Amino acid sequence: MKVVVITGSSRGIGRATAIEFAKNEYSVVVNYNKSKQEAEKVVSEIKNFGQDALSFKADVSDFNEANNLINFAIKEFGKIDVLVNNAGISLQKIFQNVTESEWENLFKVNVWSVFNCCAAVANHMISRKKGKIVNVSSIWGIAGASMEAHYSASKAAIIGFTKSLAKELGPSGIHVNCVAPGVIDTEMNNFDEKTMEELKNEIPLKKIGSAKNIAETILFLASEQSDFITGQTISPNGGLI
Image (tube, rainbow, N blue to C red; front, side, top):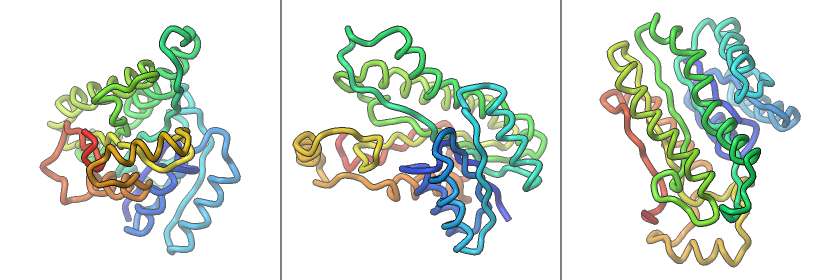
């Protein structure tokens, strides 16, 4: 039995990732902050596959709550094989109108949460001499997006953090990689229909990505097939960049 902890997994990419791991015989800790009902639905779906799953409420942007999540998973399942740092928020706004509190909140949710969970799980994985960490960034963390300078900066920080942590934890047998999704059809993607159509026309594959596309990439980076891959950023984006 393998165990995965997925932050922000009550819906969107996190939910799809939880389901994908369950289909591949992982026990899953479904983390949520506010969406308890949705998280319980994901747990029920996973149990339908015959796999173990538990939900746990934690605001992983808070250091102590992130620790509580990791400790809960270890207590309930005895180990953590994979950590997926997926929790995140977005905000579309002209740079001049972005407030200090909005900037701080974006970094707290998108970046601090990754640091908090990695810090909480590192000693556990080091003691076992193995483990896989997959951080979810964004295509805009690579290329930058107009009206999303704040969001792009937070997602770029995740990529830099991933590269550095991979070098530090590699000698302990721990892989740290990053997935940077392109335009994906989820609730977090709040573009209007016209903008989505324009984006689709810019994508060489002429389609918007699905949460399942990203979940499958995350699963690959957690699998034995990626055992010689670390410190890398894979961007499933249909060729947009």
